Length: 194
Image 1 (spheres, one colour):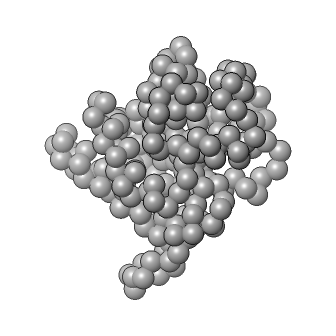
Image 2 (cartoon, one colour):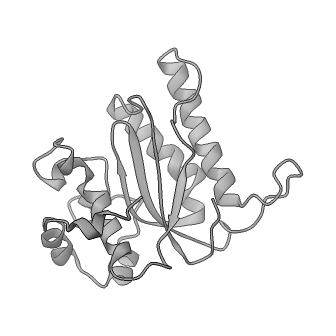
């Protein structure tokens, strides 16, 4: 993963198994995210599903610095921190469930959104919040506790997402977001999410 200061990224990964079995798993993962990742990004959106996660983040100046480690040449701080974050969760998960080995099926991906044209960043933002409803886990977006949706519509005062920055970057407000997220996706909006 390569990051540039002030750029926005869709960061995601998936597992071939359930990685969030209980509420404690979800909250522990978010606690570790805040510990390892929050100092290096502003979060615009996030969603945790039972076997994968999505974060939309804007990298800060510290995130793009290179680590001073001869074993990790050309590795940026945010990339290293993401590795540490996911490794930390994996170790705790494996210990709790008496498992061994890798938890994540793939390398974590970070897709830069700034270079795209049309409304791709906004489509990705919507897509992240649409996940639980699209998967049939909830009837309303606000019924899913493990995303930034409730924070963005004022139903929860979470500390992960930067609500003011979201509305500034996308030039929307709380009411617009609440109504807009329910609109049907167009196929062309979805084809480049990953």
